[in-house]
Image 1 (cartoon, rainbow, N blue to C red):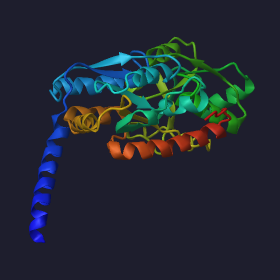
Image 2: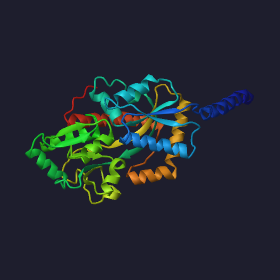
Image 3: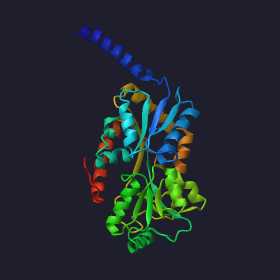
Image 4: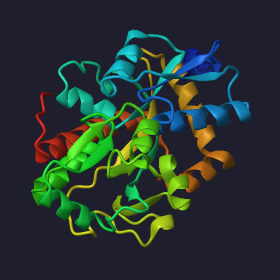
Length: 325
C-alpha cells in the first residue's frame, strides 16, 4: 500500500511547489493608482504620499505609485471609483473610518469597504483639539461654556458630516447640551486655513497635519482625542480627562484593493506595505506623527473592519445620527 502513496505525494509536492512561486510572480507592470478620498493636504493624502515616496526612494516596487485624489461625498466618490475598477490589479486605495461610516448614514454611499479587497491596516491615529494660539479658550471646558452661552455662534471646522470631527462634536453636544456650528471643507488644507484665518474657532486635527503649526506657536492644543496622552503632548488632557465622558473615536488608516483583486496581487501588496513599515523612514514618520504603527495583515483586516463597523454604528446612534444600514 505504501507504494500507492508515492505518486500521490510526488504530485502534491509538485502542486505545492508550483503554487508557491505563483504568488511571488505577480508584480505590477504599470503605474499603480493610489486613491485617496481627500484633496491635497488632507490627512489621507499626506499619508498616501508618504507611503508612495518610501516605495520609490527605497526601490521597493518596479513601478510608480501615483496618488489620485477623488474628493466628494466624504468617501463616496473615491469608493465609487475603486469599485468601478473591479478586477484591476493596479488600483488600491487608502481607507479611513469614513469609508465605513458613509454607507451607514448616506443613501448614496452604496459601495462598502467590505466589498473591496483588504490588504493591510497600517496605523491608528490619535488627534488633537486645537484653537489659535491667541484664542481666549485655554481649555475644552471653556469652549463648551461659551457655546452654551451663545448657541450656534461658535464654529468648528472639519470634513464630511460622518468624519471623526463631526462625530466627536455630536457626542460632546449630546452630553453637554451645548450647540455650535460644523463647517465642512473638502481638504485638510482648507480646514487649517479656516482656523488660521479666524473663520472658525476650533478644529480636530491629526498630528501629521498640524504638528508644525503647534510647535511654531500658531495653534494651541487644548484636548486629545485618544485613550492616553501622546508623548509629545503630556500636558494636554484627553477629552475624558477634561471632564467629558464620551466614547473614544479612533481613526485608522490602511490599504484596500479594487474588488476582485487576485490573491496573488493582495499578497504582493501586503508584503510590499509590510516592507514599507519596516523602513527607517516609515518608523520616523510614525514617531514624528505620533501614530500607533501596528501592522495588521489582510487575513485579519476584514474581520476587524466588520467588528469596527459595529462599534461605529453604536457611536453614531449615541451621537444621535440617523443610521440607515
